[in-house]
Image (cartoon, rainbow, N blue to C red; front, side):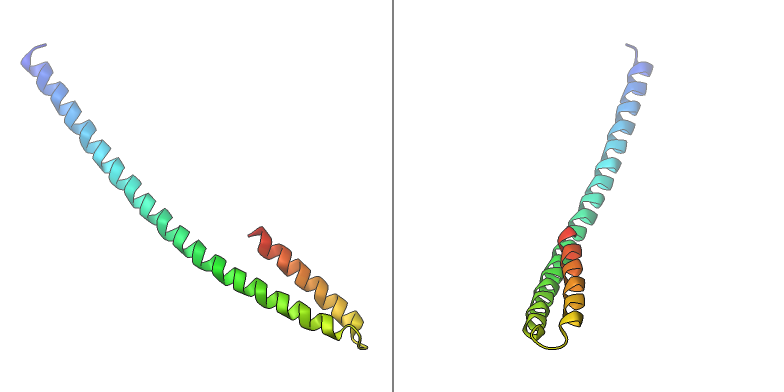
Length: 91
């Protein structure tokens, strides 16, 4: 291998290292973005859990009304609550 070929090879290695460093920087940025997203999802999940608890309490209050003449409306509301619970569990 002569000096020209060696210089060319070293240039290519230098470019490859620079490309690798650039890609590692991009990967690190993406990892930071993912970490922020995970934090946001965790925060949202705690809100969803709280909402689920509130819906459960509402269901209990509605159960208390079943003995009254509102039982048909109560059943409709309960069905809505069950659909909401199912939707929250899917998330």
